[in-house]
Picture 1 (cartoon, helix red, strand yellow):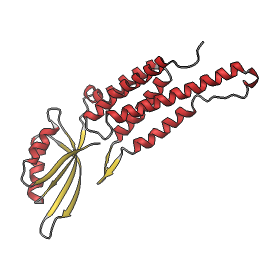
Picture 2 (cartoon, helix red, strand yellow; picture 1 turned 90 degrees about the horizontal axis):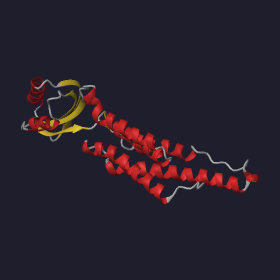
Picture 3 (cartoon, one colour; picture 1 turned 90 degrees about the vertical axis):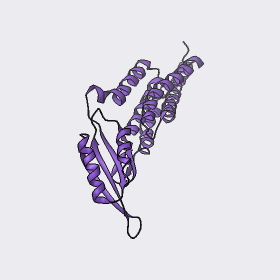
Picture 4 (cartoon, helix red, strand yellow; picture 1 turned 120 degrees about the horizontal axis):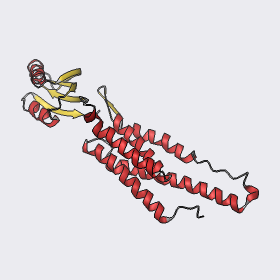
Length: 235
């Protein structure tokens, strides 16, 4: 019995890891997150390569033990040693996608998706195709379809910079009330542009009705002449 991975098996595993990670990475890139399709694919392929190296180490240990039985009690190959380093190492990579700005935390879901994609790569590299494929389906459903199935009203953060504090705040609040947008929290900051003018920055945690579109909200509020900048902040 051939204990080594054939070239065909190696290519198959690498291609499958690209496909699995590509599905997850495409979902994140479509939502304009920091880690997109290429990052997810590289993490998954890297984990797959390390898992295959770990497999080869195990195969070599078995081969050496069969050829030299007198050393069978000495030769050791830990199946989990390299893969364990992937699990912990990708945690540091994921931490790099988490940002805190003005008390707004961004990138948590992207960090988690990178970590789970590394798990998919390990599964493919170890030859556990059923686990990898089932895991890809579940992760995709969690990222893309779970909120639709459970009818979860998403909480989004929207940052608005504006002038003329009183009248603009009234305009923004009236807009939210008119469109049934619920404000869960708001952070306020003020910068002095010059001696007579101030720039105000509000970061709102809002619940948006299913009928509303984020692009429409940005377009409508940006039409106010006092609004300097407005954007959705990724969570």
